[in-house]
Length: 479
Image (cartoon, rainbow, N blue to C red; front, side, top):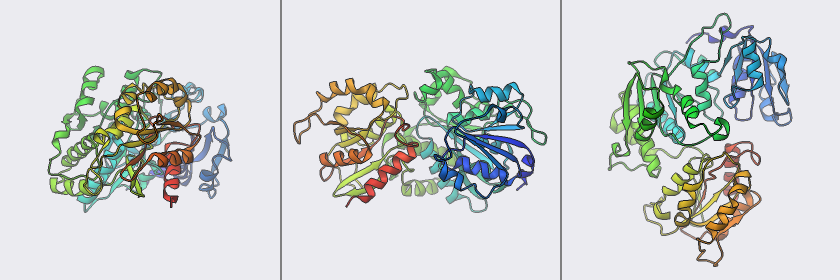
């Protein structure tokens, strides 16, 4: 365990993006404790960021520029630490580059400097479940060394783990495409004195779960550009490293490249023994289990240990998570399903609208689906195809995406008959509370309510976690 904080002492650092998820707060606290001369800037106002700012009150070496960014903070800094969602073509990032100021990302800094072994996990869908599964399996297996989880994890500042990790420890990092931009580091000039420049970094063990259309509003409908960021998970690996992928991802690697230099393990759902009885359901989760199993075996974990963890593992928060059974109705939170394909996977976890219930008995009921939200410029055709056969009723949350698909929903309504009252079971609501109320009006004992939005959460919620938290709070208050 090294004193990494000394690398940043007295450095003039601009942290771009504080946010409300906790990662920005942890990053700010790390640099402040390292005695950096820190400026924190965010588009949100002081009032909007109140909960985050309260946690940083004790630091006297943090200067705040809120409610917008200032060019001056990107002209004289030693380093810019960019939040994951900030685009590289931001005029403020371009200003920093014009002034030869390195632009870095905190997760990439952790990956470069930590003494721990890193398992990096990415993918359009499945990365969170695989990350949590791998983390739980390795924790069960490793007795002498510590196992950490970070990256795209709510409330976890990955760079803050630098002072906690030692040689022999393992850091499991869930990495989205934006965080992986920082692993390429192609936009940096020379880092501040006392740090080192690196051309790129990939984890020694990399996992690439799935690849689908997503974030096309950010990537301007350029699927290859989106894949290029994801590919940083393995781009810089060597022959001594390992890449674990699904068959579906392997086809995109062949199409877009680059071709891996490392050992490649291609995973299939059939790799999971039929005798295993996982708690998490659906074919997509069977693939997640297979990916986690292959990863664990790289670290020498016995199959019996993997099976034990898999059979006790509950869903990751907000990912087909069973919240409660209310008057015989199972209620699920799948708020992190922000693409049509993710909601398709959730619905298909209940074959033909049915699934093995918690008691092991098959239910003959179908699903009341709550979905809708903000547009991400994704094609919902695959979702529309299965809605008539996999739903009993559909409750639509407000948002720009919902507005766009209204004409198609009107057509769909004619195809779906509500056996209860003869009306087309597609209902538009003003908020989550009304959505739950309407869903319960359709639901009967043995049914399930699934909140799986298929769209983004912005405009009406702080983020997808806020959306899920509001849903959970409403469900837990039901009496």
